[in-house]
Image 1 (cartoon, rainbow, N blue to C red):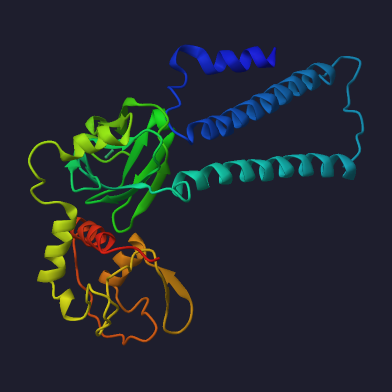
Image 2: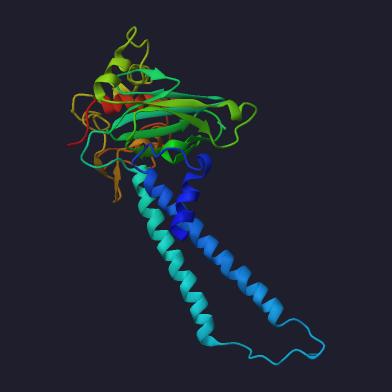
Length: 322
Ligand code: CUA
């Protein structure tokens, strides 16, 4: 009977949209687990409440309450230990699912897309330089989205992917998945962000194969100004080139060649991986993490979110750490 209820719950008139990403099944499993767990305890507690109300209600023959024991250690241990164990199970299954949403499948070249949220639209910069107000990905190829916001907190929500991630001003957030169904799916903003929040919608196009994606990425005129171009311009115009080479030779600061993803040893101990947040911090607050062997001499360079995205794309274009 529970099995039939379970299937009915799943199928109930658009209760769940299609599972169009690699993480969707895991999210549904966690959701349904929590749902049935809650339903079980709801039923148990209501049934016991009704039972006790009927059984121990006041009756003419029972003027005074009957004496009852003050406590029962075994019973209290039992109803503490069981929920505690359940909480740990929930923690385990949800953490495992969550980790799959922020790190792309290892060992396969992910499609890296930078997302900019602003009131009230989305902008997606794809590899190869094409930016668009809609997201394009490839079925079967892992995708890694790095989200930024130009103003307030937004949230990128793709119900068919079972994915939702905030875009937060002042930091980068990450979303990873592999699309498993080709087609077009809606994107909405799931964090109230002002007047047109409810209209801050877009769509994701899942191409059936890489060739279809490439055809889209290359159609039309060459991109006027890709993120990489923007980053190169920032690099040249903000004086970065005075201290950072792009050919591997160290100057006052580390070279940018093959820098992306590198584990840097820091002055004063510790390491840091060169990723989006490290780059942001190193530009806005250069003294926070100084690479071992270099002097702490860089002044903060106040860049805008869009320029930071450009520098990141430019750094990625200069090669990754082996
Ligand atoms: Cu953007 Cu709500």
